[in-house]
Structures are given as C-alpha cells and as structure tokens.
Length: 172
Image 1 (cartoon, rainbow, N blue to C red):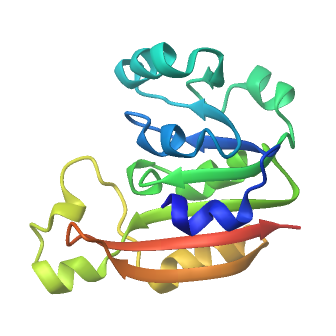
Image 2: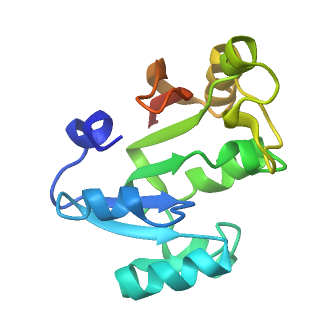
C-alpha cells in the first residue's frame, strides 16, 4: 500500500488515515509525511493513542468540531478496507471530502467482489461486518458521483490471496 501511494505524497504533506485499525499503514508511512488518524473503534483508538499520541485527532469523521478544525486541511486521505463496513458509503465519502484540500488525493481500498466468483460466498474478503460488496464498476461509480477525478482504479490479488480494488482520485 505504501508503494502504491508514496509517489503522491510529499514530505511536508498532511495525510489523514481514516479507519487505521492497528495502525500498520500510518506507522509505515509516518517517516514520509505528517500522519493524522481518525479511528472509530475505541479499542483501536486507545492502542493508536499510545503510538501516535496527538496524531489521533478523533473517532468520528462526522464530528462538526473536527470538520471545522480540519476543513480542507489534508493533502492526502487514505481509507483502507473501511467503506465495506459503512452503512452509507456515499454519505461517508461526502463527509470525508470536507477534510481534503482542493487538488488533494484520496486513496480508497476495498475488497473486490470478484472474490465471490473465485472463492464462493465464504471468501475471507466478505466475513462478518461487511455491509457492502464492491466491484470495479460500483467503485468507479462511487468516485464519479462525488465529482473527484479518477487517477487510477486497479484490481489486484494480494500476496495473501485476497482480491482487492484500489482507487486514487484527485479532488477538484
């Protein structure tokens, strides 16, 4: 993931990682840029607070104080394997874009629905808590509905065998 996004990040950029989980991605990229985190899960947030301290800026992207403080603040936003867990991905993406500067880059990563065809309905990509399944077209349409410029949309099979889609898009 770091290799996919590193060419879009500059040393003094502000990167927001939404839904960091255990913090693997922000930890791997923190030497390359200024990292900030929003993590909803309280257990993960406590863990991240120990590692990232003030870089954990909140637990809710819908928090109006947070939106006001960080309005168009970030050069890069990363949302890795989160959208499939969200009840309303369109509304989530709309609120997320509040934080992104004009000209900023957004990275989205989701499990690829092609795994259903390849591995069946018990595929690891679609275990419990996944509310949505994305494919190439549905992810492309989601991005286009929000009028952000699609730079790249790719399907990959990860070394773990998981099927993944990822998008890089630029905000107007």
